[in-house]
Length: 182
Image 1 (cartoon, rainbow, N blue to C red):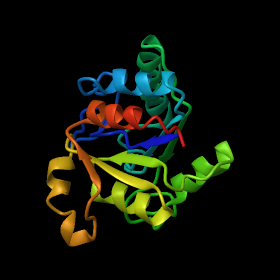
Image 2 (cartoon, rainbow, N blue to C red; image 1 turned 60 degrees about the horizontal axis):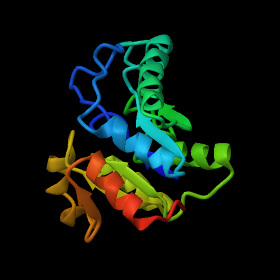
Image 3 (cartoon, rainbow, N blue to C red; image 1 turned 90 degrees about the horizontal axis):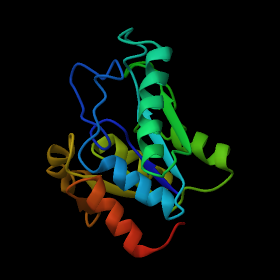
Image 4 (cartoon, helix red, strand yellow; image 1 turned 135 degrees about the horizontal axis):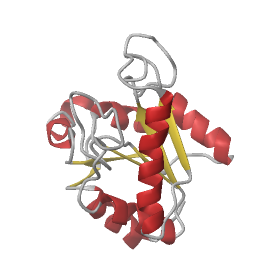
């Protein structure tokens, strides 16, 4: 299994939020990378903060339409997305699911009846890496989205020696070369 953040890892991020399927644009190579992982036997899950719901910028129907577009693109490449887990809360609501909290990861474990310990969690922000580390996942950073900015913060936040890749395609290739689907 591999856990992926969404905005900035799979698709272009926006300070104005991704509110419609038309605004959701995959990063070059990301869909193919996910399909490659899926075809190799990896379960693909997303763990994504979606505070635009709490802010009233889009509704659940729009979010579902975005995710249907995403799933369709991966399926067209011969892969599958096994689960999408999202936090609908705003940053000040104090929920357990908003990364860097680990509630989304707990939901994934419950849904698939497995442990995420030592499984890859690929993200582009410090909160992704913090959630991964707190939950025992293997934090992996991509430089897309907020990743280049996050990379400058790694050492001061105790992230020494983690894997950093230019994009999801490069990270997926490294994971595929390991051959370990656990």
